[in-house]
Length: 319
Image 1 (cartoon, rainbow, N blue to C red):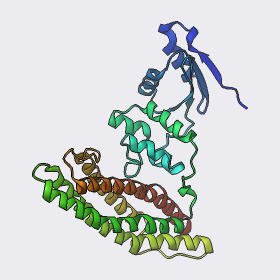
Image 2: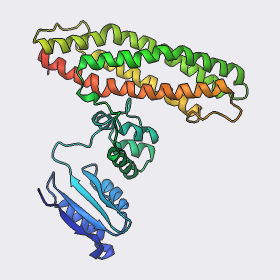
Image 3: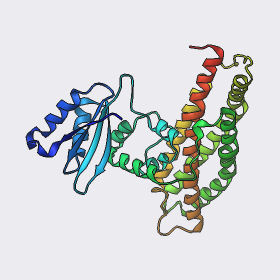
Image 4: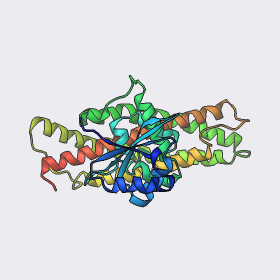
């Protein structure tokens, strides 16, 4: 097992601490690491290192007080990039709970790195990484390894779980939000906007799912069967699979933006004090719908679609 050098910062003169750490980091070869040992949380160093060296390292707490702090700083290998939020959730869906808590979009915005997403929202990336570490250390029996499912099985799962949920939920939520808008719209004008926004989402998703169910998903399953049986697959009428996928991802983003606006209008789905039972039910259903939508889009954008693109390239010899 390779030994990692430990730099004891406590014995360094205060004005020389950060310069010494930077010198140590700069001397690393790509893929190498060292550990800093300190008597307080060195989090400010993280931001200084990020600002002056860029997103070229990883930061992992080995010990977090109360007396000593140890952090492993690793320089990324050549060609290695920080994982995107979508990739992080793909590797372990439990991470989605942390991203939801901080309002980080892991589905439509899943192509951003955690550092980029936190910078945009003014969030503390180190704190989020700590919570990610905590949730991963907790036992879980409910996590599904979607990333290792076959494409046909995953496509059927999305249809049977998420598409069916959308179809069943839309009429109920429309009924609740329209009633709330009619009864409470005068005192709560945001209720009218929420009802209109959800109607937009309902119409968009109905059209969107018809295209997936009628064209895209059958072709993905055809690719999977061809790979399994070693048979040829003909080129589709839409060119390559990347064409409809680009359209689906664009529509995902549009629906996601409208859902985000509903969340803001509904104050994070916290009903006002004068809310009636229907008002509270409407917000509860909207939150449930948003949670399902996030997982739904994540499974498509970050797992199903990239794998389908790669499989088509493999079978058709595309570059």
